[in-house]
Length: 303
Image (cartoon, rainbow, N blue to C red):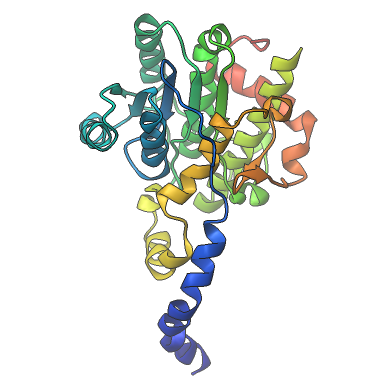
């Protein structure tokens, strides 16, 4: 009876609480007035959600923006929409399937042949809560797409980013990283698998990769489509969740705000420095994950 009454009252509770929660969630806003005329940016997963809103903002500032999408047709529709709303015709769509290293390499090869510069790379795309499955190269889907796919893409584009300095790489993670662990004996979920935890592990990997990349450079939606439970939760609590535009603010903040160079490798949330888990601060795990990722992808470990 108690549960029933709580569920019965829940819509009213949500109705009363929503304005305050919305205000709280929208507290982080990118206020940078930086203009990006002549700059080139790539946003992965830019045909929906946070990636779409990030690409829109970059285009509004005058950047030449590449929408790196698995679904090219959907990407073309989004590009046309962004062009119409921003007046920027330099919004381009290119095929990128992060679940296939051949697609990643083809995207990078085409981009490097097409562009002389790359100033902003926003690794935004990802999968969440999908049933156990593997990428084209045999990697577990979460770690393969969310971590290894972006790891390889960044490696392939890093030379161009260095040549275009000042430039930035922004890796999009999640609070879910707090539940993540890097189990090297079960990195691919071959011994035991949980869709929810696999996502958390991959988000932790994003942070460890960002921090290790920053250290080495010194010497950064429709995710619920696979889970019926998560879709139900999304519908129930959608008023609590940031809009894509709100969610894009921190990516934009990290990509655009001047003076963040000394904070390279740091984790941001709501446009400010954020605390990360102990696992995410473990340099030993970060270095080992780097080496394992290089081994899996056939890359030199000292890139």
